[in-house]
Length: 251
Length: 312
Image (tube, rainbow over all chains, first blue to last red):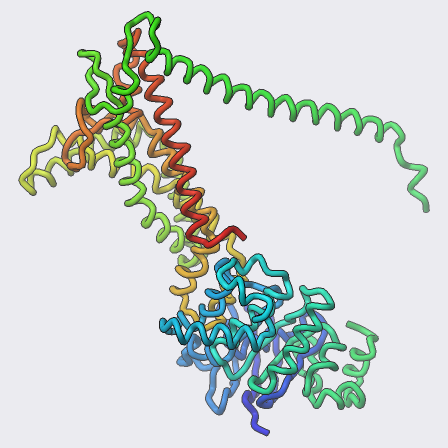
């Protein structure tokens, strides 16, 4: 199996706060990798390194490197705009833009200069289909995306990310704002998406990690404690702290 | 330990009394403001329409020639408001046309681009600009802008009446409404959720694309509210405009170097030296002004809804 991301000796600081401590890990292609750990353990912070979203935070400093298909993406020269078309992201709270469903999905491509209506129509349909939303919205593509339910909005956000045909989709607690039914829909969706995409998901729910992921990484206070196949992590954790966490003794 | 024993029985009663009292006061306040609006409106309409009815003591104005007239000469008792209405639209929208884009760009700059430590300086300046009394702007326009326009016009081979002109009014109003729209736009842009902005950047949009395609769209309601307030100020400004408009007797004019006359300057000029019909007709002009503003606001909101698809 290929590693799509290789993280080497990564340190991250928010001002004086040392948020990630020399992280080393590899993310396998076309697999679902889950990051788990208690709040403030650095899992979201690490996720946001993969598409350089931490650049937006004042005083954030990163040392070490992350290779994306063998190319270092941490050094300054990297074109973050291009990187983000290859590494998409879905956020904790559904954040559709206040425009039509169609325009939401076409947004990324239009920003890349795609104007051909036929291409856009096709991509919008494909993306919404892949995101398991097409049948629900095909008759109202022109209506405002903010009218959709929370779960539909989140699937729209996934469709929006898919539309750019990225290699990776990062998901930052994508179901924590959703009800159980919407959550299970998103989880089913992830199962089908992993054929085409590498998925890295941050989750607070250990059941979710156990259900959907192939690999799980457990973080605690900025350290990567343990990373292994999900089976191993949940059945034979090597570290005492991992065991304590997954058995619910803290966190 | 139980806190029940410490609960003051009287406190419950007292709070009920305070609640009732507060409710009454709120209702009264609401009632008073509603009454005020109605009283003002009724008063203005009543005084404004009486000049069109027979039996009015100072003679009559024909309603049709008032509403469609292209001349305003109180010395000859000719009162035609149509060209003044057009002039008012031209000055207000002309000012908005200049101020609106500048305001939007300034607001984006201040809300999104300026480093945090300089931001306070910019916002303070804009808020100060909004707080300057209109008569001060008027003096500035009459003393400075008018001279610029005069020399600009003569450089182009035109003459002006000492710089008093349509252009002077538009520039003056643009300066006056710029801080109003900008302040509102800053507030609206800052209220756009961070997630929305991040969502756009995460899709590989550049910062500029994010600003113009997503942030301005999300801030649309607040920005339009700013535009409405700004236009309201432009329509309603009398003092400063009177100092540079030149009070043309005929019109409308589209020549930027020609003098003009707006609804407000018509209401204001010579108000204290007149009586009778010439006094009361200013209320009629006031009605035209109020209707203009209401219709304009309505249209702007309709346009906003059209632009953003349907409402969320």
